[in-house]
Image (cartoon, rainbow, N blue to C red; front, side):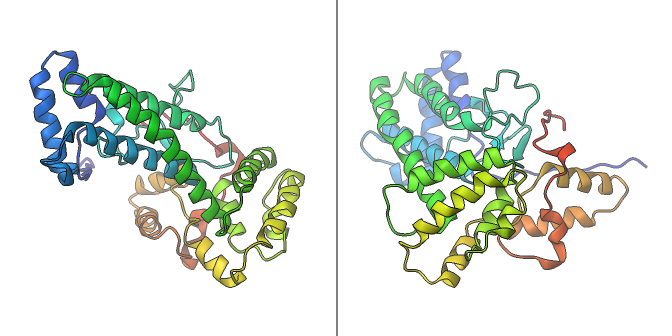
Length: 318
C-alpha cells in the first residue's frame, strides 16, 4: 500500500496582495471594495465604520509588513519567493516556496535556485516588500487615492522597519540603554560575521552568555580576528549598561533562539521519515514550539551545518 499525507495550513487570513491585483487587472473594481470590506472584517475589525477606512487599512498593511520584515531580518530568515501572491494582506508569514534560515551570515544569500537575479536574496527583502506594497497601492487605486497611499508608504514603511529592526538587534545584543552608536555597532557586527564565516544563530546564542571570555565565541569562527576586534568594542559598550550580567544573559537568551529549522536538519528528518522513522520530525516540532529553551536531550538539532550543506539553494519542490 502506498504512503500518503494530508498537509493542513492554518492562518487567520489567506487573502494576499495578489488577490487585489487580480480584481484590478480584470477591471472588476466593485469587487475590490467588497474584498476590502471582507479584509477589514477579518483582519482589521477596529476600522469598521471608521472615516477613510480603506486608506487606514492600507496603512495597517504597510505597518504590519514592515514589522514582519524586520523580524525576518533579525533572525536570519530568507523567504524564497516574495511575490505579491505570497504576501499576506495582514502582514503575516505565509507561502514561502523555498525558504531558509541563514547558516553562516551571508547578506547576499539566495535560497531559491530559480531566483537567478537575486530578487529575493536576504539583503533585498526590505526593498522587495516595499515594491510589493507599491503594487498593492496600484491595485487599490480604483477605491483609494493613490497619492495618499504613496504618502503613507513613504511615512511608515522604512521608518518603522528601521526602528523595529534596530530595537530587535539591540535586544539581541543585550543593550538596553540608548546610545547613538548602537546602530553602527550592529552594522559592524554583521560585517564582522560575514568575514568570520560564522553561524548566525549560534553566534547570538553564545553571545547571550558572554561574560568577558571570548573563547566560546571565537572557537566557532573560521576567521577569528574580525569578531575578536568587534568583541573589544562590544565590551566597552557593555560598560555603559547597569544591568547585572545574569539578568542580561536571561533577557538575551529569551530573544536569541537556540533552534531554527535549518535545511540540513530538515533533510535528515525527511530521510528518516522515508524509512518510517518519524522521531526526528516529532523532535523538530518540539523545538519549533519552544526554540529559546535548552532541550538538552535534543542538542543535535542545533548543530551547525557541515561545509557541504551551508546556505543551500532550494527549489519549490524541495
